[in-house]
Length: 180
Image 1 (cartoon, helix red, strand yellow):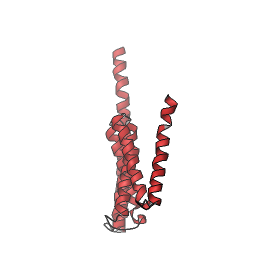
Image 2 (cartoon, rainbow, N blue to C red):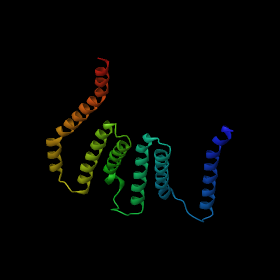
Image 3 (cartoon, one colour):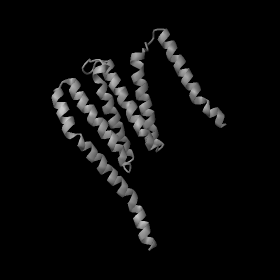
């Protein structure tokens, strides 16, 4: 019985793909890869968030956020709903998307503070490079900011490590007090 249920999903996917190809070949509706792949990203993101909310698989918030934001970005780009620059000019957006995915994952796992470190690093770098790409900063200003304030990243990482270490040691100290 279980084997028959396992074959339903792949069979349904193949039927759907076949129907879509026939619809495309008959010129009823044109499916072009440029229009289709962002929808695939959105569908994957929705599937991952379906698992997060209904199946309580909180670890899938990261890929869900990643695919949803990539789908939104490519739809906006493909339909020229924002500046029609080339993808080479918007590569920092991918850093921002990764940073947001880490932050959303932290929202679903608030006990894992370590997710905020790469999240904020990706967000910071993404916004700095996007600002430079868009011409919001002059190159010498970026160099000055990075040269002057890069130790702030070390401070933030150090604080996160200290809080992470203190959080892990508290339950042990409580148990050792009970034993005495």
